[in-house]
Image (cartoon, rainbow, N blue to C red; front, side):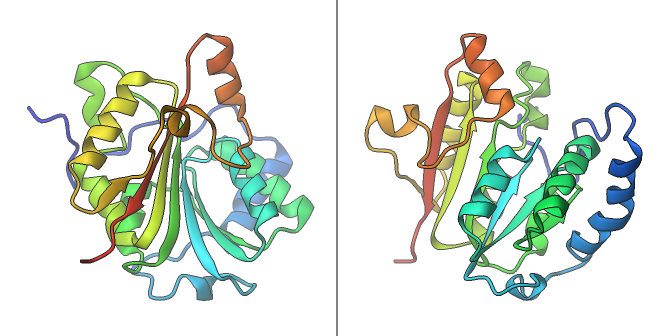
Length: 231
């Protein structure tokens, strides 16, 4: 049996945790629909933002939103797509977006593997996949988000020269991802020295999950790959 998930894979992961507070529920019902990407094929990503943007980047599984919010604040000229199916994380993120009046974001609260094929080819400047669920047991590996298929979807959605970042504290998942990037005809692994993947990315904001991982003695890795240019 292959460890790779297929095009009809089910979504794996929690959709909802503890009950939402009244204000959180109101944002899920009111603000999220206004920011959610439309259904169906998307022809022009940049046109979906209410402010002019120079490029569009995607973060898959933003959790509590610490990293995504930091990038949005530092680059208001960039449009960001945040994907997070866990409703409690989405509710917390929406509270900050509303409070700060941030405009350079659109959201997707479903499976990113179903969103990627609907994006225009070459429309993304960058993709971040940070601390995805590792599904460590062998029988669970087909649930991992990274597969040969999703690497191909990343390549399709990224512009030539666009970058893909993957961070994890689980060595097996880092090796799993690197193996699929190295055998892809569409990506070049850009890390040249050990410090390139041992040290956080420039401007990195440590998330609560990463802080717990480091406290538990796990060592994060930060991979970077670049979408290969056509020869």
